[in-house]
Length: 632
Image: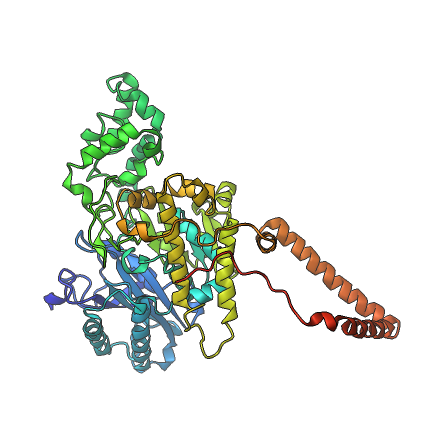
């Protein structure tokens, strides 16, 4: 049985876990195969410390309100050799009186359990499809002591998924960009840009299957992101005890003093380290468990301290590379001598150096990002260095929203407490109403869509809605289908990256929004991507796919966009609806009071106008096509 332990996984599936709700102990693991703890039995409740949130992720908040639900979640790795662990959980509840074998600890009217799969590959939809069938059969037994079916599930999944490639449509099973665009419309592009800027984005809706579906579908628009870009997306430390919390607070106090050092302070004090003020700063850095080598010069550290709970990214001022090229060059030369710099651990500092040209086909290991990249350097290293992707967050993980080691997140939640604390997120995505709420006016300005962006979004929406009622295609056709939409976003991102590489590219980048491009160029993912050479980008035509001269259609598009999204536009729209409703009601009342004379006059006028309009109704004017059509 030891061969099935967590240290020597035989296949892509690590564990099959059953989580139940105990009336006294709450959510707890009731069964695991192979055992989560190698020295324990299958029925042990013990968990690895890194996975202490597993029961709360598998059995989500408010699960009692639904007969069944599905959860996607990420767990941190157990050791340095592992990457992100992908979890899929199928929840169901059954009446206790329907059980054939009722155990002594069943004291409630309903029994709530989840069957969970922990995997090393992000095949969420495929795992869900298999798991739902097994969960249904497991509950139909009406005897939860029958665990043979779960062991068979483990063997079957490892047998069928062994050697499965992450390339192809099976990665996107159950994720529909088509439905996403129909629901969020042009706001999908705002979400796309939000994640490019590595902001704190919180998705909110119930039940969980809608939540994780919307979040993962947005990520599927980024080329290669689900396949290869999430391996470092769950590197966080669980909040385990009061002692650890106090230790973290102490380290944070020192870290905050370091973060407060600006670029000008770094320059002015570089030659005065022996001074009294500099000595005080060095002492404060020492209190933050910083290494001695980082203290002799007040500049971003070249390596992380093994005792520090904070990654180097948290102490790196984004403007260092912009305003102090001399010091950035020194850091570069120093890091070239360190073999640890290419390690993909969360504490690894950001280094800027060229990557030698490699193969042009397939996927290769990124020299700096640590991710498996294609010839264009994609996926972008967004979910690295403390930027988390948590499709579902339990209430017990709430502390991660304000953790200093977390520089940002794309997370999903169903508990209203997450939504109420808006100051912890840059944007809250209301999936139910299809809204994106951003409180910061400056960020709203940065994310304001340009005319070219509106053309792109309108182009997508037009093709999706035109094929919506085709019962024969039903989203399976190419143009307007799911794969087509992903191809358009791939072209959008390729064009953006290609434009960023051009000399004198201000005019090219203006179509993407000058404030947005300025903010994106200081993000972690852009700086790492830009530090490498990607010869394949030479084949990509720079410039926005929908660049071109303004037209009357652009004016209409901008007006429609403003009316639908600005607060003033919404008020005007509501006022117009209220006025229209009042006019209709008044017309009905007047018509009834005069014995229907108004209705008769209205019908006579309508017939007269229809006879006059017949010669002019031969041709109809349509809105012009976007300036340039995107070819897949």
